[in-house]
Amino acid sequence: MVQKKETYVATVTDQTVAGDGVVKFESYPIFVKGGVKGDEIRLKVTKTNKTYGFGELTEIIKPSKNRRTPNCPSFSHCGGCSLMHMDYEAQLEFKSDFVLSNITRIGGYGEGEFEFEKIIGADNEYNYRNKAQFPVGISKGKTVCGFYLPKSHIISPCESCNIQDERINKALKMAMEYIRKEKITPYDEKTHKGIIRHIYIRTGKDEIMVAFVTNSKRKLPNTDALAKKLASFGKVSLVQNINTGKTNVILGYENIVLYGDDHIIIELDDLRFKVSPNSFFQVNTSQMQKLYAKALEYAAPEDGDTVFDLYSGVGSISLFLSKKASKVIGVEIVPDAVENAKENAKINNIENVHFFCGDCTEVVEKLISKGEKADIAVVDPPRKGCDENLLTLLKNMNPKKIVYVSCNSSTLARDLVILREYGYVLKKACAVDMFPQTCHVETVVLLQRQNT
Image (cartoon, rainbow, N blue to C red; front, side):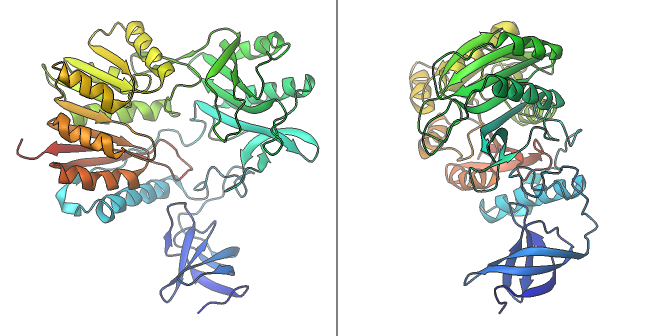
């Protein structure tokens, strides 16, 4: 049995879902942050439980063939890029194995029961994010922004991130210069005092949106000068988002336009999307196109088919599906997103898509009672997966195919078990790496109704 505070030499044989290395002493695992599968390391045991323990990496004796030097000075303490010390091919293998393991281990499918396609990697490992959210606070008496340390709300100061669009990094510095010049106080979670909570930035092809999330409804002062500086990136939208709640939720629901428009236009394939601050839109535009193309391939709608797109957001998947389906019905609970979706259909001159706002179960039941049918259902739920009511709804809708897009393959796999009980079997699955350098990965699967 290993002892706390003792030092050991071991080989990393596996990695956790969070990217930590795993070494084993007989059958006892020790989790080591920063370890890469194949590393020979020296570690100091920091904590032991009955069935597992934790260790600190003190020396890399012989590095894994997949190890590389991270190109970010914040890597060791930032809570974001947990895989930057692995080469990209190893990251893809890690994510592919993780998704496959969840589908087989949690979902109960044998590897020969469905087609597991090769993971779709990103063309760019870095500077791919079109959106960033930076908490603002006080560190050593100075106003700073950055990212939270892992499992905390302590800000690690950082005004430049290698996975963000470089325009975001430059705009962030301008925004922080503005905050310091105007002496706008950062928000304090403990006292619920202060003004600036977060800086939220989005980029389009030739556009940029900067939103200040504030703990006050009072309009921020002297923002025109900042807007003029931001104009070097193209069209500017400057917004103040109001969030006065005692909450960890980043955005509130009220927006004040300080300059420009209340939205940004993002181009995807031959489509254009109007996106407001509160609307969900994938952060990696080029990989998003690949993900939705795969979803469209799996759905394969034919002339005469009606597709229901549940959790439709700003209509991004719906508009892709409209290219092949006779009719697409999108359902989303966020009002701003639904308004954006309707406007996006108009912007792109698409007339065979209809969007409805409300709870999916309630909206779809009403539509079906009025004679609508569901030949194909597409779902793209949040990380928690589909709730029980929605899975029951899918059963009652009785589509011939279900395409499930997931940002959490463990909850996807859980839902696959239930959908199988409802008569839908997994036919194909494909992981898509939307988030290089991180442990996150998207997955799209095709389920088919049995006896069809």
